[in-house]
Image 1 (spheres, rainbow, N blue to C red):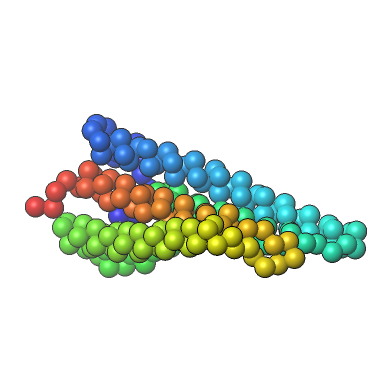
Image 2: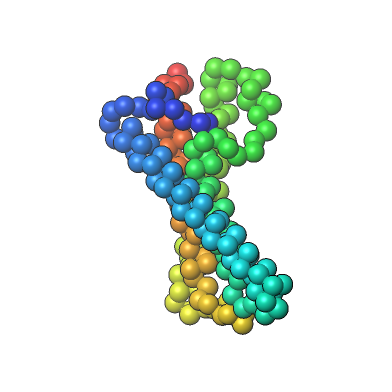
Length: 179
């Protein structure tokens, strides 16, 4: 049920409308955080290039930091992409349908996406906890703890799951019941 939202399509009242508005705001806020993480990664790459090629010095942390921050940006930005309908989708069949078959297909695809994201969030949180309790590090020259690099996956998958719920509710509010 991923589609771009507009205020006129949001339910105005009740817990459903409040949930959708909160999730839309949270997704927007994490998009800003994702943009900051992306900018930090780009700056780290620029610093690395300057250090290597202008100053002839070796680098220690820049590559790993860039990978973690840019990957984190992608994961934290996913709920906003779902909110705005910016993901890649093949919609030939749903576009050919109308009425309840289309609504059913969109709901089924959203439920499959939700199920995947819930499973990913569960596994990601277990992974973060293992890294935290195990004191895992990256094993590189820089050797930072691993859990901060894994945290965006857990947060991003959790928020993506919650945004899927908002999109499903938004679809029901827009289309009414399928009877």
